[in-house]
Length: 271
Ligand code: KIV
Image (tube, rainbow, N blue to C red; front, side, top):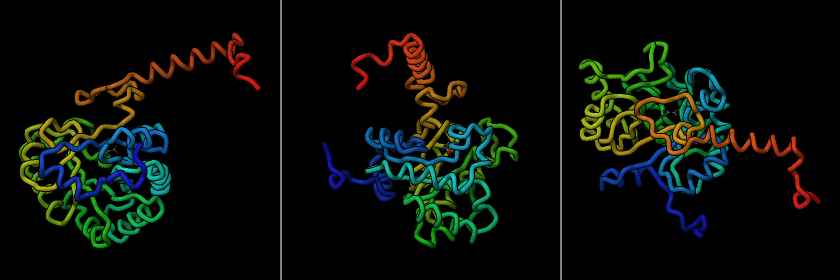
């Protein structure tokens, strides 16, 4: 068994080196201590404390309602579990758009109060002041382009983005811009695979895709989708590795029946 000191931590520099030697990067979401412990022990490279916690943990329809305090609570739970992975935390809706001072103060609260390693912001050139100010404080920033769920009411749907030339061109321009100002990586969500390939080949920083095809430098999924806990979400890009909703439901049904029949607890399970 490896001790804390023997584990080589994943840093933004490690991710850059992985891209350079063409080693794919694995990234998953985590919102709590117990799950983060399992994912980190399995060897995932990046853990994202995503604002998808708003949907997955709290049952909201969108990512908009989650607050900065709630993100800090999730991030600090994850950080306590992690020995190896790089932890990225989403700045939630309303904590960085249109006000770079507020953006910096939100990022600093996340870093100080949770102990996280970096933050992620949705958008390109339109949020440049916020990104630059956060970077100037020495906080690593990951970008997020393509489908950006915090703008769902602008898009109107969760369908594939940047299929039209103008939007694809803006996305490439934004990716180059994020690289130029110093972001350490970019998440590309739900865009055509060939466009994601072009971005990954154009910029030198790691490009992590979700629903963006096989040519990116790494992949990210929402852990609860991969494990089949979120039962009704079935997009084409999702591969389910377990059907935990049914498995957990079955186990709980057996427990209920054991309690009712007085099979549980047995003589051996009491003091
Ligand atoms: O919040 C989240 O889970 C994300 C991923 C979909 C990349 O941003």
